[in-house]
Image (cartoon, rainbow, N blue to C red; front, top):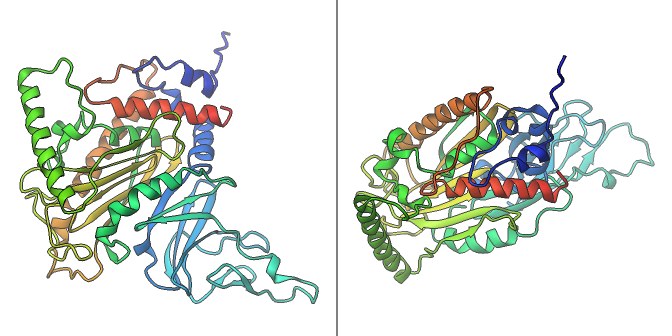
Amino acid sequence: MTTIAVKSQRELVAARPPGHGMQGALFGRSDIFETDVDIFFTKHWILVGVTADIPEPGDVSTVDIGKSSIILVRDDDEQVQAFRNVCRHRGARLKSAGKSTVGMLVCPYHQWTYDLDGSLKHAAHMGKDFDPTCKSLMPVHTKVVGTHVFVCLGEHPPEDIAHLEQTMVPRFAPYNMTHSKIAHEAEIIENGNWKLVIENNRECYHCSATHPELTASFLPEDFGFCTDGLSEESLQALDEYYERNSAAKRNWENDGFVCDAVEHLDVDAVTQFRTQRLAIAGNGESQTLDTRVACTRLFGDLVRRDLGDVHLWTHNSWTHVMSDHAVISYIIPLAPDKTLVRTKWLVNADAREGMDYELDKLIEVWKATNQQDADLVAITHSGTQDPGYTPGPFSTFTESYVDQFSRWYAARLAAHGV
């Protein structure tokens, strides 16, 4: 019998030809999946929610990530806290996944009781020598940027989260999204590896053929188009796009809105992100089918509707913020071939459904787009697991960010000894 040697993750990553996709085993193998979760969802900063998940003191949101589980809670001082969802007695989970409101956090097993700041307040029958101050809930590194709640489950969180914070705080500030509410949220379990979900999100090669709702407002030229070898017609279209985008940028900057692109994506980045204020097609107001605002009560004190789309990528999320609403999605890997995509639509906290916005109009673009992307990820994952699969070349015109993600992935594995 012939024995086929199983390549290590390092060997599979090294075998990727420059400018080509990853080997199928990197998407399908359980051991590689476990390593990915340990490195990319434990030792890196990840998005796990928004401040509107826990708007009032005592509000709790519990998020499971691999074998880990965290509790996000708004404490009595209205600060966002995050703790390991592990009782300090014998390890029982304090809360199941989802949202709730509590006065204190009470373990369902032996009723150890914790304050909203994580301190242990009550533990019966532990004897006079027991010191409750040594058994507070274990804190999780937390960073709130605008409305985005990032956590790092590792002992040494990457310090370059400060770059993301410094970049995004002034971009988010005019929207005052801490004064927002969740108009709608949805979950899709995509039948594909988490890396395929992110790769799909990093390119718009597929957009014109598969996203009719999104392309009513979204301009695929924003996704790394290269002009080399393009037809005269395509070059003219790009010229028109850049002219329009430049005019919009000058207009926004004159009113004090930050517009320039910031990319922290290359192999020397740890906390990977990209942001830019993108132009919106059509009427230029929002990502809706008619490209006008879906909510007439704008964020913060905004009066301009035509502020484009402040987008943000990280390695587990994507965000689009318009004058009237925001769409924030993040992913949690469940299995080599299963990825949870959780999406939240935010509006001004004072906006009234049925008066200031109609829910169907607010969510129709990204509800359709998310399902279309899920279908694309599923067929791609299935194909990469076919014995006949050989990774093909990326488009130099439209898939440069996918190639960049592949290089970053390899660099981060190497940095952790893989």
